[in-house]
Image (cartoon, rainbow over all chains, first blue to last red; front, side, top):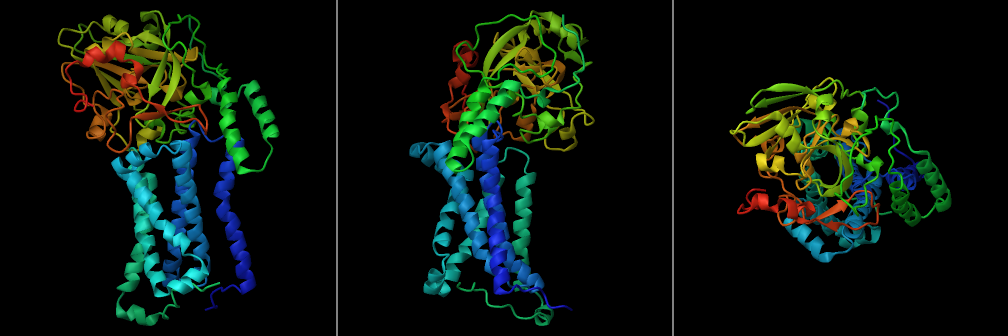
Length: 218
Length: 326
């Protein structure tokens, strides 16, 4: 069997640049639609939904790096994970800012009431708040400084993902087919991890041990 | 006199020239670049859109209707928004689905059957219904249970005249409105999202209230398919879902009808569904609403009790606990 593709450091830097631009496309699309008066009759709802959706997509991509390695042994994409995670935070931040500003005009009373009284808002808000420390500790210096605690802290990505998907599920009026897609994808991504952890010894032995889970600094 | 004719070009396909040109101009003026400018342009665009209130849709004009004082002073929601942002699950659950998904829908010929507690069950054609009473324009606020609202210039007849014409018996306490559920013309009906056909209902006194109308048009023309052609219920003090669309059956009963949304989520949707800022939907607020057409930078507005029609309808609910009868 041919050796699996593994990019050189030059190739990797190009892959990162392309990925960076791709991840900005959803934002570019919104701006383009905005300039062409095409954000539907309810533009605030539209951009809120769109940024929320893309935060979820980025989160699912972030969480797919490890299962990819477990299933195929391909490990290099872990070097893209930080960028994907930060793009998740970027779209979640846009999503939250739209809610705070355009939707509620910083009416903190109304926002506090909304968060306290409506579970879908509460879980979405919690998911966003939990992602702040992860974004804040995503740089290499923090990874070095926090050592093993960094890994523990970043386990928060699992509750963030579950709450994020629940947020979507609870907000739809009736047709849950779209949030169901995220439920299934998340279940699959977490399922692979469980399977890998508790797989029979015979299968475990036939595979190479995983490379270190810590992302490389730099 | 109004003659049915199949339009060879659909409402949805035409952007009025002035609007199109204004948009071009604006895009040029705004220039490309900063995100702020882009967002601002989206906000301003809507004001150019608001000027395009004449539909120029190619739909049949309704020539003979009288204006009424309802809705004086309200800013109309642009035609484009009224006809492109719709909840009509028979044509898909997305709000932009009904317009494209209803292109092949044929609202004529159309018959409506009147049955149940009436002296004589009968079937009326849509043209018969147009002749029951003089058509009137009613500019009403419409508040959706999802928290957005519009102001729509409906054309229709008071439901009360249709009911008198139907001659219900003394046993009739409620009216049930049943919508068409034709999987051939209505792709949404193929999915079991709701129990088809869509059923709505009113108490007899609600149905007889002068505010309640059977709408057959909007913006001076027959109803576009996505808005419930050829006829739909409009009950302006209730959440929008009470307004059954593309109605084929009107049934008078002595029991409260089990309506579609009550069946689908009895803890979230009630039979009465009166607009009420003090009773939240279990999952979201009903105290404020977003007026469609305002653009990106228009704040939410406060929702009014009975959608602002309390003077005309509050007496219908004297002594009722509106928290329980939501």
